[in-house]
Image 1 (cartoon, rainbow, N blue to C red):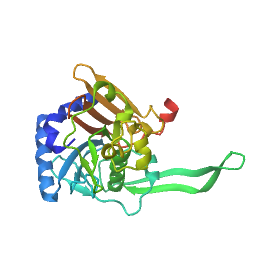
Image 2: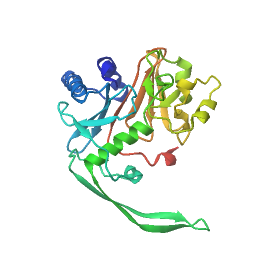
Image 3: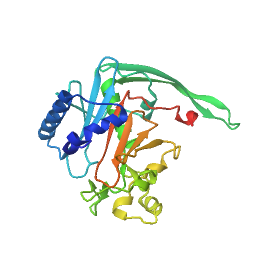
Image 4: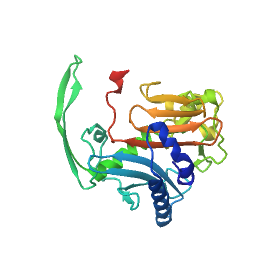
Length: 281
């Protein structure tokens, strides 16, 4: 949720069965504005809350420039008042998203987890052990950065037209976005990942007959495997609000009110990825 729309968009938390008290809302908005001034950020977004056993992490990220993905900074707070920056760990790997140990709520806490041996298929397609056992020793603060980065890259989506690719190669928020229609809001190919495009721009553009270079170079949400089963789309017919919940990262919810400029996203979860999704379809 963009700080500029935070007051109006916080009620949408109720669609994820979450809420903040009036005192929490006031503290959050005040502290994020101070953070924006102190860090000289062009924009600040409240991401949500990662729930730990002993304490919860409030999550936010900021954009130093007009390009919302250039030099993006991650922050966390334990009390809605003091914010601390999360720096990218020097040595991190994708295996971290397999960690199942719950977060404690202590940034200095170290997690030790044995992921077991790695397996590979031999010429007869029989699984055989390959290499030594993978044992992770990760500081919770570093794991928190990894989870935030993964959620933003994999699970946050926004309606087509929110992101605009300028002729200078910048990714900016489109100030002329006015929403997508009711029928279009039900279809995942009308949503884009909130990240720099990973797929080839040419392939992204060819997916649409009505493609627009400045809007459609971004990756479509319907490409996530398993296709059509990575997001659950629901609608509130009384307000025409569409909720798109990630099934890979439970607790990650994006929302859009059809035919309006109202959109956003929030995460309220335990920081663990759902690796059992393919077995539940």
